[in-house]
Image (cartoon, rainbow, N blue to C red):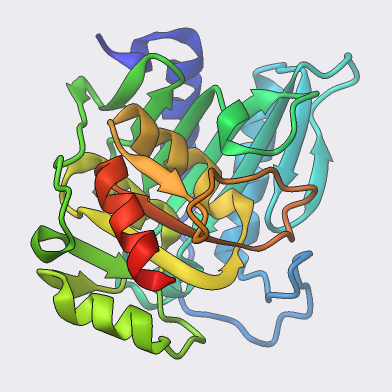
Length: 271
């Protein structure tokens, strides 16, 4: 099976290709820019180019829907009655991309337009690594794939065996998280939620932890479906399923893991 051969999968794969091709400008941050996105962060030139490219591509495909983007909020895709809601992060991991250190990605989640903005309602997703020509796609009930290759989580269930990533940007870890990090097999910090989650999906990592109450939906919606379709589990830090967002400025904490057993073991240790 190859998701990229299906109509929506082909569209997502091509969107990844055209965004990568458009990002040919210098990567360095330009803090002189005055435009800020709805979260209050400075929008870099490459963020805006990637967003414009994705917006134009979706409009050219004559899709009937609404595009919600990290940089500009709500963008219309056409005059017809909308059918879909597309949630876009043009460049997740912007600081990484600006400095050329990776990882970074273009992310797009596809939901029915009337459905709440929640992982449970995502039907298709793209996490397209900006350093690689082959994105990761997922379709609800159809699995997760990188190209023609199905991706699966590692199946690890115990913290002591787990290689984990922990997001620490603008955050001092509390004692419980420090104890968990000391207990885990290995710890990394990537500064890009979507790529950390897809690393869990592919088995390169066993878990990703972000308990800062800072991560916003466009950064994790697409990747969370990838994790679930690869056999993993994504929860709020409380241990409950990820809830719905009213808008892209809503902030969350989350735990993603290769298995439900590992996810709940992490949640229990963090309490």
